[in-house]
Image 1: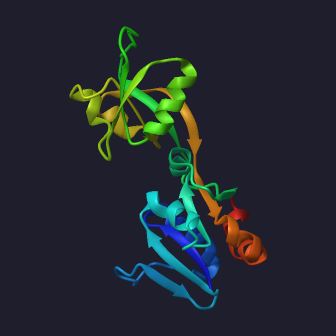
Image 2: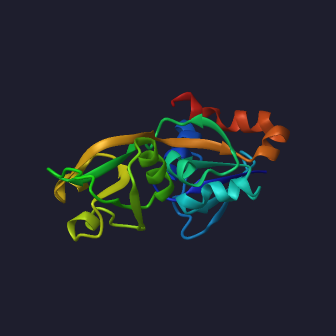
Length: 204
């Protein structure tokens, strides 16, 4: 069986919908809390994992392939093949701040983020000295309560930013779901992987 690390949530559901095609053969409906699913008709085994862990399972060879957000790949730099942009889960990584905020540049810029590596690389390119504050949720709160000056976070529609009085200052990178593969396994089962994932790529 080909093993696939599938992120829980929207990315995983979107991938299964594409793979299932018109017959909807692949689904999470009725599976309860099971974390390992098998599709014998396609000779596939799925591991349902936290989105930020997908690349770890693939890098270590537990899964042959997986679906990961480009944000995870940029932040963690796993040693995997990035095969395709799957075209769904589109959003962007951006710098945002309270509306009307201006950088006085008289002190290190305090950045609240779940992506400290991406934030540091972005501001290093700009020659701006920063201090990163790593958070794992509700990043938008940080500048509102004085924990940081700005944030670096994923922006999809911008609604959460607007509702909290924040605005995008600049985009760092466009993001979407990516198909990744274990480097060693890919060379052995490349044809099978391409046949299996063709429906994902066809509409990307």
